Amino acid sequence: MPKDSAKFTLRREGQRYVCPDDRDLLDIAEEEAFSVSGVAESLGLTNRQLDYAVERASGLRPKDLFRRHRMLLARRMVAEGFSLQVIAQSLGFKHYTHFASEVKSYFDLPPRQFQKSVRAMCSDVGRPGAA
Image (cartoon, rainbow, N blue to C red):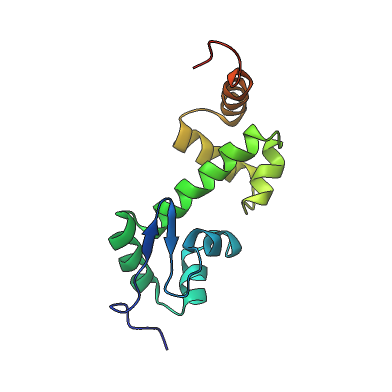
């Protein structure tokens, strides 16, 4: 039986969204392959209850919050030197083409150009005069 949504409240701590049981919502999302229904089930909620709790805490729908987190993880992994194929697989995309379209839509750059841009920014860090 799903929990009463009025009792389920996410607590915002910096960039974290903490569940009543002190688990991080975005960690759960990663474990559940960024599936809204998988996260809801893991928390004993309906999709609508999760939607309501996430909207109250973040102003975003779960799908949008999870997408943003997934793309930030992709950017971090590119900066760390992972290949685009490995990143797509690691972030649970079943097909590289879906990952590529998400990157293009979110960052407004095709994946290879996005990769070059991120890596160029990373190589500038620490250089004298670098912004």
